[in-house]
Image (cartoon, rainbow, N blue to C red; front, side, top):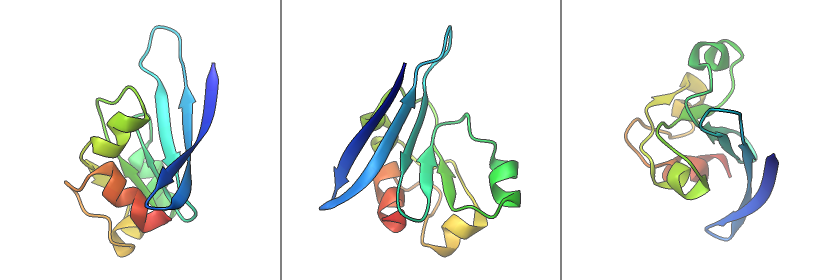
Length: 97
Protein backbone atom coordinates (compact mmCIF):
# COMPACT_ATOMS: atom_id res chain seq x y z
CA UNK A 1 0.00 0.00 0.00
CA UNK A 2 1.15 3.54 -0.76
CA UNK A 3 0.06 6.37 1.53
CA UNK A 4 0.40 10.05 0.70
CA UNK A 5 -0.46 12.45 3.52
CA UNK A 6 -0.22 16.21 3.98
CA UNK A 7 1.82 17.02 7.10
CA UNK A 8 1.58 20.43 8.72
CA UNK A 9 4.87 21.68 10.08
CA UNK A 10 5.00 25.16 11.58
CA UNK A 11 1.98 26.29 9.55
CA UNK A 12 3.42 25.00 6.26
CA UNK A 13 2.56 21.78 4.47
CA UNK A 14 4.96 18.98 3.59
CA UNK A 15 3.98 15.73 1.89
CA UNK A 16 4.45 12.43 3.67
CA UNK A 17 5.02 9.36 1.50
CA UNK A 18 4.88 5.84 2.93
CA UNK A 19 5.32 2.70 0.86
CA UNK A 20 4.63 -0.59 2.62
CA UNK A 21 7.01 -3.23 1.30
CA UNK A 22 6.74 -7.02 1.66
CA UNK A 23 8.89 -8.49 4.44
CA UNK A 24 10.57 -5.12 4.98
CA UNK A 25 10.26 -1.92 6.96
CA UNK A 26 8.35 0.77 5.04
CA UNK A 27 9.96 3.27 2.71
CA UNK A 28 9.29 6.71 4.24
CA UNK A 29 9.89 10.23 2.97
CA UNK A 30 8.75 13.68 3.99
CA UNK A 31 8.93 16.02 1.04
CA UNK A 32 9.21 19.79 1.21
CA UNK A 33 9.26 22.42 -1.51
CA UNK A 34 13.04 22.27 -2.05
CA UNK A 35 14.19 18.96 -0.58
CA UNK A 36 13.26 15.90 1.44
CA UNK A 37 14.04 13.78 4.48
CA UNK A 38 13.95 10.05 3.85
CA UNK A 39 14.62 6.74 5.55
CA UNK A 40 17.75 4.71 4.92
CA UNK A 41 16.44 3.37 1.60
CA UNK A 42 17.82 6.55 0.01
CA UNK A 43 21.13 6.08 -1.75
CA UNK A 44 23.17 8.99 -0.41
CA UNK A 45 25.81 8.76 -3.15
CA UNK A 46 23.15 8.94 -5.87
CA UNK A 47 21.41 11.88 -4.16
CA UNK A 48 24.72 13.72 -3.96
CA UNK A 49 25.54 12.98 -7.60
CA UNK A 50 22.09 14.23 -8.65
CA UNK A 51 22.65 17.42 -6.61
CA UNK A 52 19.41 17.12 -4.63
CA UNK A 53 18.76 18.49 -1.16
CA UNK A 54 18.20 15.35 0.86
CA UNK A 55 18.76 14.09 4.38
CA UNK A 56 18.64 10.55 5.73
CA UNK A 57 17.30 9.17 9.00
CA UNK A 58 17.24 5.54 10.07
CA UNK A 59 15.25 3.18 12.28
CA UNK A 60 11.89 4.77 11.42
CA UNK A 61 8.47 3.16 11.00
CA UNK A 62 6.15 6.15 10.55
CA UNK A 63 6.12 9.89 9.81
CA UNK A 64 6.40 10.85 13.48
CA UNK A 65 9.53 8.71 13.75
CA UNK A 66 11.03 10.51 10.73
CA UNK A 67 10.37 13.90 12.33
CA UNK A 68 11.94 12.83 15.66
CA UNK A 69 14.94 10.89 14.29
CA UNK A 70 18.39 12.41 14.00
CA UNK A 71 19.83 13.20 10.59
CA UNK A 72 22.57 10.68 9.82
CA UNK A 73 23.52 11.90 6.32
CA UNK A 74 22.86 15.15 4.46
CA UNK A 75 23.83 15.98 0.91
CA UNK A 76 26.03 19.02 0.34
CA UNK A 77 23.04 20.88 -1.12
CA UNK A 78 21.01 20.14 2.02
CA UNK A 79 23.92 21.33 4.15
CA UNK A 80 24.02 24.61 2.21
CA UNK A 81 20.34 25.02 3.13
CA UNK A 82 21.17 24.67 6.83
CA UNK A 83 20.73 20.94 7.45
CA UNK A 84 23.25 19.57 9.93
CA UNK A 85 24.03 16.04 11.08
CA UNK A 86 22.35 15.28 14.40
CA UNK A 87 19.44 17.70 13.99
CA UNK A 88 15.98 16.16 13.95
CA UNK A 89 14.06 15.31 10.80
CA UNK A 90 11.60 18.06 11.72
CA UNK A 91 14.38 20.62 11.95
CA UNK A 92 15.73 19.46 8.58
CA UNK A 93 12.37 19.51 6.78
CA UNK A 94 11.87 23.10 7.98
CA UNK A 95 14.87 24.04 5.82
CA UNK A 96 13.05 22.58 2.79
CA UNK A 97 9.70 24.27 3.34
